[in-house]
Image (cartoon, rainbow, N blue to C red; front, side, top):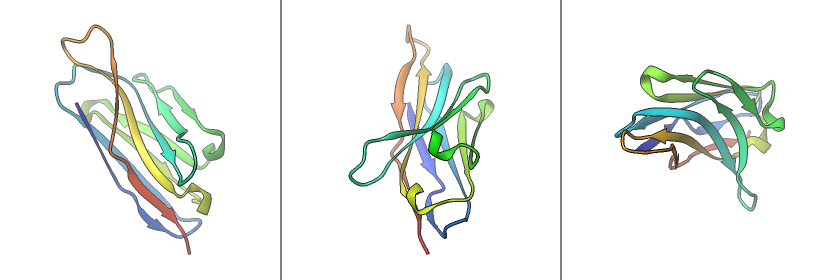
Length: 120
């Protein structure tokens, strides 16, 4: 199973970006999907998660500005980021709990990360 993230880049404060992460491989079901981020010198932190049924959870620092969504038919999770601030600068990693056909329980997978830089 592979998670391929895309959509990062350089944006000015107050701007917007949309991240995508597509899961591929021997996928039977995908449970929760999500986004985490890690800035230099800091620990990885939760940005947002979404269950297969669409229930969402957000980190306090992004509530009201970021929106997570998913397309189950495409095995893809999205992160719409608005009103971006310099402190949102980080590498953003997608994450998914995926069950392959032969798995008894879901396994956790990480994408490779995509850089988001918010600067004027």
